[in-house]
Image (cartoon, rainbow, N blue to C red):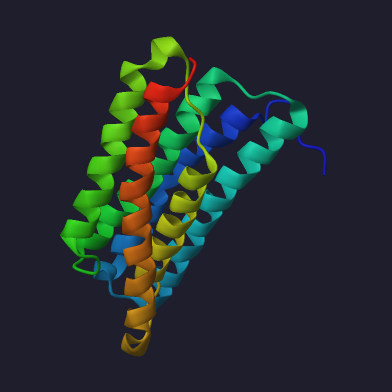
Length: 181
């Protein structure tokens, strides 16, 4: 399917940012405990996650990878995951400590990236992409109205996401100081 020229990877990234509040709205709808709205919220966040994949594929297929896109795409990911996590924590469905650990790392790395931007943008690496995948699925399991018998799976998945979040944060900082940029 050929997309119109105005649908650029950066356009998709900005659209993802614009639609994040829709995901938050659906999470809080009817007090946050309505299974129908929980499924709708999951679909919204799932589509937002797919848009992250789409903008990357489009950028590579059109050879339109930009410094702006390399910076904004991870920021949009952090806004999306952060909004979902904070919303879930306010609703009492995700422990605050998980939200805090992940957001401190994500915000810290974003500020770090801004501080070294003169040296060039460091694009996301494979570890960061795996970390993001685990975060997205982990949060998705908290959005869904799972039966309590599946909490062990949800919580285990999130534990792996937290561990990857911390490990890749250290790796990112280390690689920034050891790269040739």
